[in-house]
Image (tube, rainbow over all chains, first blue to last red; front, side, top):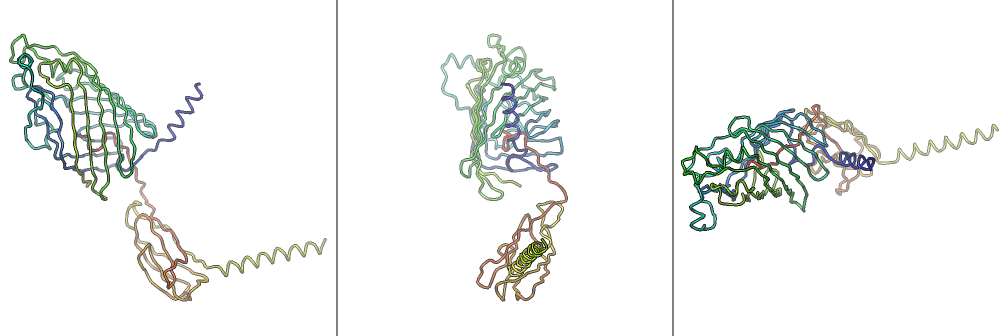
Length: 280
Length: 128
């Protein structure tokens, strides 16, 4: 049995290419820059939180021999083989983006201020809710993380663990994901199911309510950590040497500790973008 | 013994002569060099090449780099030297007056620097 497993592992490793396709790779010591224009939005689950219209979307990456910057993540890749890779990195925690429009994630969208499109709530539910306009500001946090990739012939497994190093929420996050890639005609597609764990400290800092917020004591809420399943799909199709069609969609279901917060009025975060991208 | 050895030698010699004769009657060319050296394999490269032709079937032939005409010449001019520019890879083609291909030779660019590519860690367009 062990021999069979070893052979399978060797076969899987041999079947993996270091650079499976142009879109997945970047020349060492160079930038990979692009900008996409289209239509889309990312929902905001918070009460009175603005959905983010996605109109202009950048793709910014720089890769050195080991260090890299890729769409908001600054890191160092310690090991890179055709079969697996390990890196450590710093990244801005995206929870804060729901509380403020001026997050680097949001800065490329015009300040259209779309209102949250939740269904009408009952009077009782409305009274239990707390608007983000009523509470104390939440701070940006910087997370340090470590990620392991295991590459297969048609995709990759990743597991990452992050912890707050900016002493803001003192919480942790872990993500287990599998990205499966394929091609249908001239369309390249990928699907990525994931499981995200958010610690109690992280969840409570952003979505809990306590004495720091200007609310009555009955509305205080302690948010527990939990697991959020998510799935995203992406597809691209080359139009010319530099232009391509882009479609991206994602769905992330919030865990109970977050859904039960008076700050939160939606069960999930959704996003969709369809447009064209240009590669410099 | 002696007669057998002589006869075997004659047969071998005859075969060698026939092969030489056959080779001499075959349309062929020698293109040198076949690779161009540039800084990277993606750069444009200029290559000075020398072509030696043999037993061309027509009086007039034309030389093409992919689909671009370089020159036409009399097949009696067996030596041609020229300079060409190309990127990645190209095909040198010899066509007769009717446009029918007689001979072809692939050329490619070799880079001094090896381009190293890294797999992207995050998916493209994943800022949001």
